[in-house]
Length: 460
Image (cartoon, rainbow, N blue to C red):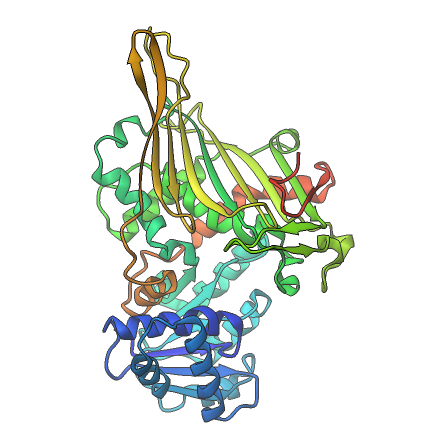
């Protein structure tokens, strides 16, 4: 296992809110080596003790369930260096004296990836080291291809094993459970095809607005922020043919096959099968039952350039040209400032084939992913047979308890040399190929930018 994590951008929100708490959870679970250390780096001119104090406060706020002694133990393993990320001399100083493999985590704005990876290439890394970078992997297909070429050049003969493309959704236990549900339950796999399934909805709906993320979000929008990555990862796990084994290479091959099977849209199809919108002013409910709060229109949020026409809501209908899924619709819908939080897969089965006069709803399977995360199967029974009176029957249960947060699973995969939770280079490019026709149609103004009130169900 790699024993040194070099955390670039250590003073940022990603590090403080997710990565350091995930490391604390790993330490509490005794999943890290005793001599594990974090080399934290950022541009801020901080002393080591000042950074440790900041990190301790982040852990107290974002990892309160981890015992205080464990948090303190992790903090003692942290060192801090002020570093200019694109300066080879500064970076060489950061790594001076380290001879063992390191994991370098780019908790940085994606706009810096090219410059920082170039610096890593010119500096040189100890053999067996890994480079981890967060989605999005490029801002379009061309930039994704260019980034992959640069990463391959820096990785050299070690190839993909050196690179770990992080989409933290793959670390969610509920998302990892998608494949397990199909593999372990004979009741599902025989009907997991277009003969029995009419439509699969993949939803990523949030009841929060911009929340201070204008600097990144206004340049990306919902489609680039979550649909092109998170949601296509979920689609690939849902639609893939079952792998012959759980070997990470075999699983990712099947995921890429699923993405390649998505039918590419013409511009005319993009007009009829996609929607985009942004929220107007409205009222967002309080998730814990409070009074809620008023929010301004997206175009009036601080840091937003209204002329960009950035969407906060996206809906795309996809079709897969495969034997398994020909005739099934895949609806992807994501949005901000909606009336409720729903991140789930909903499987809508075709009506039952029978001669009985039952006017019942078709069966539905709801697979919660990130709150609410329950599993629910909606069936139909009857309260009597004479006269025949259908009645809904719902079987529901929470998922198995999570042993680690999503980023805990991701970091463990990185440090242990695995790639099960990494997005492969050709996988990232295949996802951009799916969404490029949509982006082209939107950029050409062929799909109007609608509006919806914040706190509503979305555009009418």
